[in-house]
Image 1 (cartoon, one colour):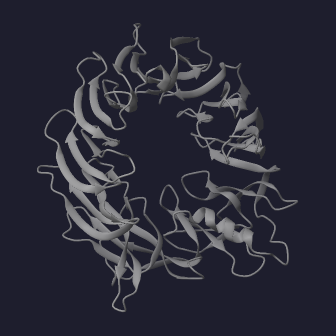
Image 2 (tube, rainbow, N blue to C red):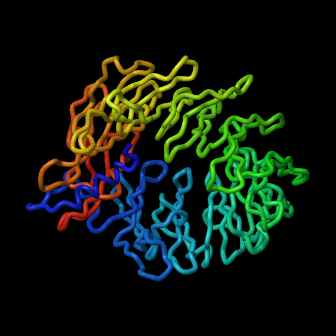
Image 3 (cartoon, rainbow, N blue to C red):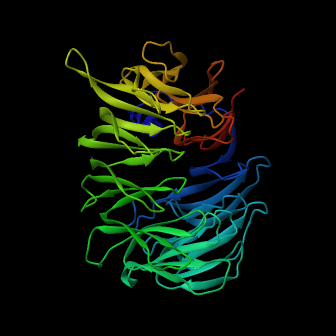
Length: 516
């Protein structure tokens, strides 16, 4: 299974000597120079990236840390704006609001203190406002992009974007979370301050309400009225208890589990699943129960991973592990919750976006005593899983969840495969549609109408190409030569236009290419 396929292709292309230079990049060069950390912003009108990012070479810094100049590029006008001078590549140091109006980022980042100067840039006006805080360690915007909460020198400040005013809510704060409607804020104090968990109302004035001491993880309901959280009974304990509480009263939270380390909340917020185990390293006992009240149901022992379906109608997990392989099982969360075991030695699995089907790969013994990695599919309501194909590498559901796309019939140690598709629930004997050849790694477009993939050339100079084709009438078209990290970025839902980075000498920069 090639979970890191999009990245390994670049390494394979880079590690072999090339007797001649690779072909020049294709498409229009939008920006010259060394580019990294390319991201498409909400609204699909701008991208952000770092230019000339370098490792600060400071002791005790993360190996992946790079500091560079932060730019935004308007994709239609080609207006390029520099926002920051010393911006980090780490997660949590840059954030675009969901409405695409603002980009928040830490400038003058200090790797030793892990803090920076917080700025808010208006993307429409292409300008940066004054610094909102000078020693900011954490920040988050409400889902609607109206409010901002940030921790500056340990003080939690909250206000309206883009310029406040921001008032101090608490001190010694580590993190915070808005409810989906933005009207409730939960925040946790630092461990040395007791790890207290508090909630604050954003619409009505009043002091924050204490929910718990020695808290761990926490999740707010969409309406902000309930808080699911973990807390230790004493600071010396390792395991956590799981609670659900009413944020309006902050009194008498209900205990769900005495000893656990991990939980998940279903999308409809009606169910909570959790692993009971004394240590996070060991597999645990999986339980599921209604959040509003009711009996807990024990599903399995020896569980490591679990996930609700997108529609909250089922829960899947793996149990009985041997190495990285476990038995895949699921339970429907309707009526009597009954576990159902599907297949042993499962290596990887995923739900479709609709929540009504699972796809997974499993090790299967063959008559000649060897093993193969086979692809299976299971639609909820079917009697048994369907074997789709033998020896499958990468796979994905189609956007509508009705088909499976997968790589098979591979050569060159899995670096060159056929890309096939099949309608569910058709099985191994059913005819497959061949979409492409020579595929190393692939992705469908967001609208499901096109497919794009990486191809590693078989002869020198070895390099990585980007190809794309329509799903209905696959006529492959080469879009890019000599592609480098990060992987090519589709900039619209149709999968016709891509940005990619080239680090080829004399051709470094950000390129735009398009499917004709």
